[in-house]
Length: 173
Image 1 (cartoon, helix red, strand yellow):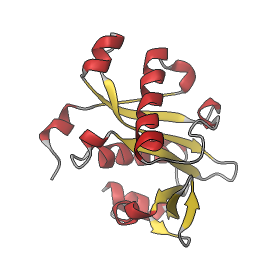
Image 2 (cartoon, rainbow, N blue to C red):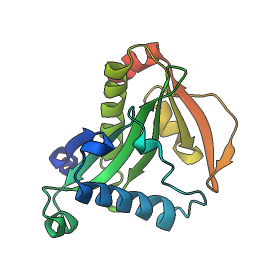
Image 3 (cartoon, rainbow, N blue to C red):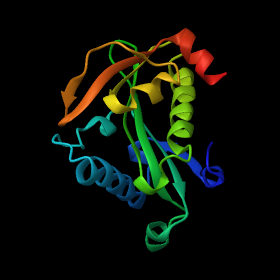
Image 4 (cartoon, rainbow, N blue to C red):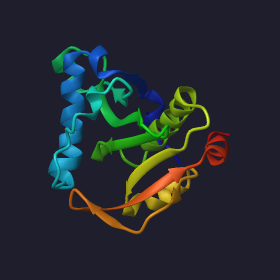
C-alpha cells in the first residue's frame, strides 16, 4: 500500500536543455547516490543520452533540505529517463528512487507516468528496459515481459524486458 507521503510528490519532466541547472545538479546527485555510492555500478552513469533531443527526463520531487539550499520548490526523490530509439521503440532507463523513499509507491507512480508519456510520444511503440534482475517481478507487475537471460551491466545483474502495446494499455487501465 502506498504511503500517504507519496501523494505529496510532484511529477516533473522536461528536456535537459529546459531544466534549471540546480535541478540538473540534484538529479545527477540522486543518480550518483543510488548507482555509484549505493549500488557500486562499475560503468559511468552519464553516457550522453540526456543530450539527445528525444530524451525526456522525468522525476518526482518533494520539499527537503537540498531544495531549500538550492532555493527550489522540491528536490528529486525518484528519477528516470525516456527516449525514442532509431528502430521506433521507446527506452526507459536510469530508474532511481532515493533509498529513504522506497516502498511508498514513488517508483511505480513515476513508471506509470513514463508509460503514459511513451504512449503519447510514440503510440503503439514497444517500451524496452534493462531491469536490474531483482526488480524483474516489479516490472512484470506493470506488464513487462522478460526477453533475455540474466546479463551483467555495470557490475549488476540485469534482464532485458519489453512492454508490448497491448499490455501497455492494460497496465495503465
